[in-house]
Every structure is written in structure tokens, then in C-alpha cells.
Length: 307
Image (cartoon, rainbow, N blue to C red; front, side, top):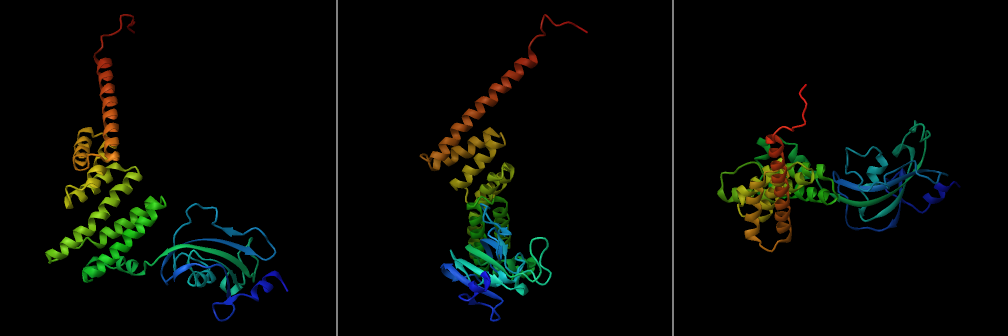
């Protein structure tokens, strides 16, 4: 018996034709990955008799997100992921029909190769409903009941939060924008519009912060002011607008925003620290301006020789 054949004896058949076999190394918890979810996992693929993987993403600090049905190229891996829970580590054997087929993938994978993959399911998000909603034209989105729209927008915002915490700011920004787009339709009901505005507020704040991380202060200011249009005493919005203006060297505007924030939360260390930074930046700016004026209007040197 070969190594893979011995291993296969104690593995579970998950496809019914022994095309994909599974052995759980460490159990996970919670629900299994749903179809059409967006998943994030680590994997390593091995050929028989070789100790080093022919493919792995285990060295990446933040493995990329993959949408089931779109981003995973191996059929066996699609089947594998759907059997897994968060935190689970499992080993899978794929027959050629569920892996690289009769042709293989030269020069790494020979023809008719059975391959082994170790997969660790880090996390997943059930984005099927929100993905389908965001693919619809606006006039169809407007026919959805408010409760469902709010749920979809919350899913997108939570997805953005997940990405933000992993420093994937560009991806987070896209998810927050999708959440904002979900909430963009106005209703004939004032109560519905109030709920929509309340749902937009955290999205606007998150976009302001994300653009700050992306070093795009002008965009931060736009989204911060959108948040202030909903709640003009929102401390986070005032603080982020102040930070944005400071980066843009609009010192008077920065001071106005930050002092308003400080008035609402006088003992907030972040706000007070930013006001100190503003004071220092403004002083350096004024010193620089004075030096320029001195150089500009200084009398010509007596040692200058005309040409």
C-alpha cells in the first residue's frame, strides 16, 4: 500500500464516490460553512512522497478572502470547505477528478495525481443574500422590505469591520460602500427614513476612519461631514473631521472640529492629544511662514556681485 492508500483507509467519504476523503485533525465549533459564503482559510497541498507542499498560503499574515463558487478552482476544495466549521483543521485526499485531472498541472502536478490538502478554516461570512441584493439594479432593491434591507446592510458593515480589524482597509472600504449603497433609497415613511439614517451613521463613521487609514483625508472629511449631517454632535465624527483637516493643513477648521469634540468629551485623551498636535503643527507652520517672509523681503546682500 502507498502512503495515501493507507491514509485513505481511515478517512470519511464526503462525496459518495471516494473522490474526496476527510480526516478531522482538530474539531471546530458552530455551524458549517454555508453555500455561497465568503471564506478565509489556510491550506497546504502535498503530493505523495513529498514532504514540502507544492502550494500553500500558510506564510501569509492575512490570507485572501475567497467566495465559494467563484474563487476556488479545485472542485475537491469546494466540497471540503462546505464540511468545515470555524477553527477546524482537517486533512483531505482528492482523486484526480476532484483535483487536477488527467492532465495535471505541469511542471508541479503530474497527470492523474491524487493530492492531499490540509485546510484550517479561520472564519467565514454568509454573504449570499447581500451579494445577490447588491447585484440587483436600484429600482429592484427599492422593492425589498426595510427589515431585509437593514439586515443586508448590517451584514456588509460587519464584513467591513472584519476586514478593517485585519488591516485590509481597501477591502473594508468597498464593503462599507456597499452597505451605504444598500441604505441609499429614501422611503415615503418618515419612520423608515429615520431607521435608514440611523443605519447610515455607523457606516459613514467607518468610511471616515477607513479613509483616514488609507491616508485620504479629503475623503475622510466628506464622510465625517455626512455623519455630522445625521448627528451634528457626534464626537467620533467631529474628531475624524478634525483629524482630516489637520492632515489637510486646514488648521482653523481642524481647531473648530476638535474643540467641539472636546466640549462634548473634555477628558477624552485622544481628542486632547490631537489638539496638542494641532498646536505644534500650527506653530511650525507659522514659524515657516515667518521665515519665508523674512527671506522674501530681506535687503539684498552687500557682497552680491551683479552679472
